[in-house]
Image (cartoon, rainbow, N blue to C red; front, side):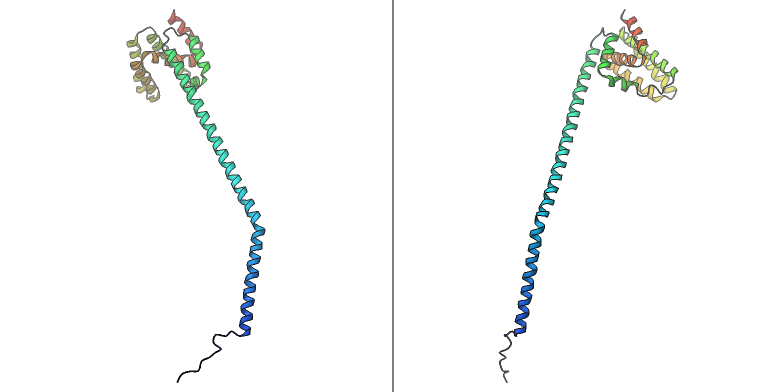
Amino acid sequence: MVSPINYTLNVRSPFEQSLRGFEFGQGTRIREAQEARTAEEFPLIQAQRQQTMDIQRSQEGRAASEFEMRRAETERARARAEEMRSALVGLAENPGATAEDYSRLMMQYPEISTDIQRGWNVMSESRQRTTLRDMAQIYSAIDSGQVDIARGLLQERVDAARNSGNEEDARQAELVLRTLETDPRAARTTLGISLRALGGSQFDAAFERNSS
């Protein structure tokens, strides 16, 4: 038997319809409130974003400025190092370089003396005297064209330093010895600068004797 058709299945009751209307009204009011709050907060959000962007731009600008400063400092240091190298080459190529020439160079580039004097003051006075004496003898030999004698004196200093366990002095003497083998002028200039930086007037007197 066929069931009778229920015509009320697709018909909402007045209560249901009013409830749906209430829910729709509530949703509309909530959405309107959210939109109003968003509209109120939007300028603040925009201001915060702008502030963040300004801070980022400021940081980027500061970083770029610091980078340019470091780059400029590097370029100045490179240019100064090149100028100093040229001055040292000029001094080495001058066979008649005087004590004044050495002094002038070291006044122009005081960092040379700073590097040479590093660790000098911690040496004992007797070791300082021995070092200056040996350097003066080796310088005199090179300056008078007696490279073989200078080579022998340097080798003696290497052996003496190594036998006494002073590897640092041995290493430095070997460095000058290798320089002597490659370019006696460079070795003479290295010793002359060292004597001028460490021996002062004592070197000046020895230099004048050599040039006379």
